[in-house]
Amino acid sequence: QVQLVESGGGLVQAGGSLRLSCAASGRIFSLNVMGWYRQAPGKERELVARITSGSRTNYADSVKGRFTISRDNAKNTVYLQMNSLKSEDTAVYYCNLDSLTGLNFWGQGTQVTVSS
Image (cartoon, rainbow, N blue to C red):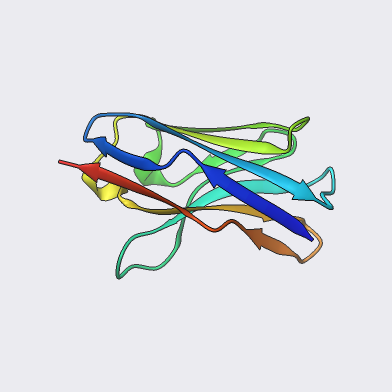
């Protein structure tokens, strides 16, 4: 099993920045994909950004140029630097680890609220 613990959410004004962290523990294979998803009230969960263990990344169009995903493989931690935040970024952000073996793991979620 894998446990994911997120931190770094909170309340920020539009135009501000936040940095999310997600630490993974447990049985983690070296090859995996970690990512961030978000879910706003009344909407489906959507991909924000993903990063492979080789540091290849992909982003949702809505966050390109504003958010940066990175990871520290030695610490099994993934980060999401969020800049130029907008009210539409308000959501619960979830960390995900795709083990590439058919198993997906999720964190408990962290609330990000952007006030306009």
